[in-house]
Image 1 (cartoon, helix red, strand yellow):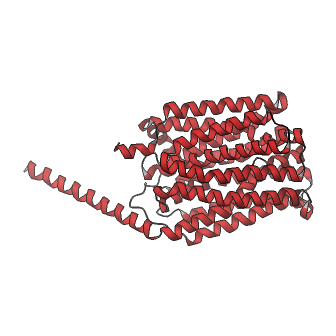
Image 2 (cartoon, rainbow, N blue to C red; image 1 turned 60 degrees about the vertical axis):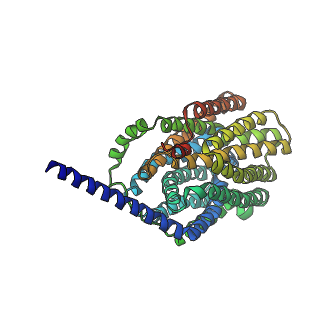
Length: 441
């Protein structure tokens, strides 16, 4: 009798396993059937959206604008810290918004719209408010931008993981970043030389930010054509506190994942120097609208052209190698910045900074997808975004204090040291997660 009971349980287990396998096969079939339209939609969304956001996130326009309004390195750091602190506090909440949902795109539209309103507010405050209030509003809008960005990063990276197979993800992100970077480089030169240089519409910076809003809003609309598949399994809905208490267990299951968070956080801390590249360069060679346009273009073109190479390396050898190569180039470029003094040598250094930071951002988001189970992906992305955003919030604030109270050179050396720590952590303590599947682990 007991033997028959065991056999019954075995048959039930086998039937359940077969059902799950069939569901996964059907899920993969839906992904492949809708791949052409979803690939095109993600490419168009990235081209327009990233073009606009790169104008905001490039280490040129925002720091120069805040410095123009305030005249203070510390306030520049405070403004950038507000942006990333907003992202830090919202990332985990973004995961709990979507991980129990069969479809995440509707939430993505709401969060994406909120993020773009922050860019619009930044532009309108420049047009219509006096400098003191424009500065206060700009800091508030950067915080709002970061708040929604923290959630959007989780949602849209989860969406991409659902609709784009792993075999194509590196090339898609590489080509998307390439096309967006080329467009952003052209727009940056236009913004620097003509918008800022000619003070278009009475405020060249505000005009540049307004263009960024139009591009990003148009990019968001491109996702209307996405066909999002329904996964065969999702997590049950959980409260934020409950999911936070599960994070230690997730890290304990995979020590390499925990060390990856450390490596990514250290690299993110090195952004303490990012807002001050342009101010330091301006002290050496002067900061006109043309100079701003040239340095922004150099940064974005290099970030663009190298993204194709980073994507190819990632697809062939994994994102771990891309991560280490990128932060190495980043560190060398910071060192070089302290030893150049002409517009074209500074532009070459900004190109190196663009290549290094572009590779870091590209690999940072792609590698996290390759750790662990699909059901835990939103939370893994959220923890990564929280770690990096906290560091990117602390970094500019500390950087502003160091630049103002000690020197730019001391700040740059500290950033180089932190990047070296990140590379060492990645090399010695983090394995290539893609090889686990190849080895059958």
